Image (cartoon, rainbow, N blue to C red; front, top):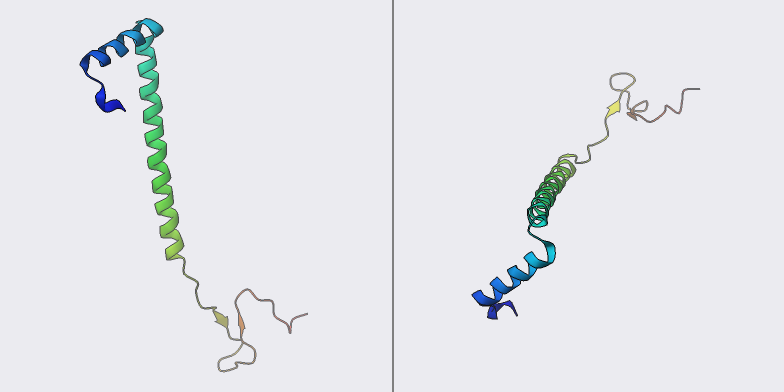
Length: 90
């Protein structure tokens, strides 16, 4: 569709744009467009780094085997996982 545009058509389009928007508003419009493009680029970059950090955190936090606390050395009947309330305590 745009492959057939020659230099005369591009110049004609630019002249029409200048006539429609005016020469005074074009620099402001271009500046605003540049700012919005920079913001979009920085936000996209931040999203990519956040995703990479979240993936790295998910991979590094592998489930650990439950730790146990023994009441007395060699007494396995009293051992329980950490964080679990003692059933014998009242």
